Image (tube, rainbow, N blue to C red; front, top):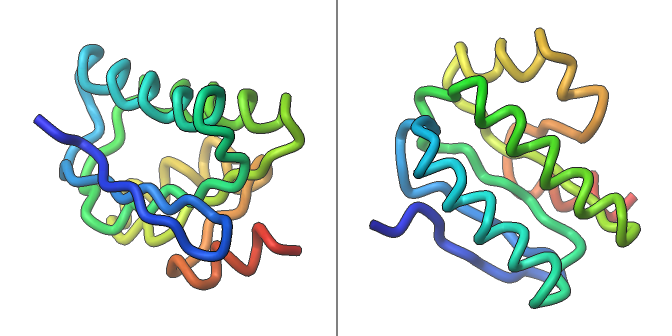
Length: 117
């Protein structure tokens, strides 16, 4: 099953989650491997994770976000989150202070602008 759709816009990679729940070790590991491949093999260094359809974020998903951030940070890249539309997902990202590590924006355009600055 495909979990992600990859789009390119102005040298920024937008990753759209095609699943509604980011949970399960196998699913999260698969997504993380695909994102790390984008960074390390494809040279993508500006990534927006579009969470529009996500309704649930498992704690393991937070570890994945940190791993992606660290991979990007190692190559002077940047990560932003857009549209965590679910109130619980946004609360989890805020309570864990992920918003202090990388920008969390209301839409992909705002996330792209945050990466450009």
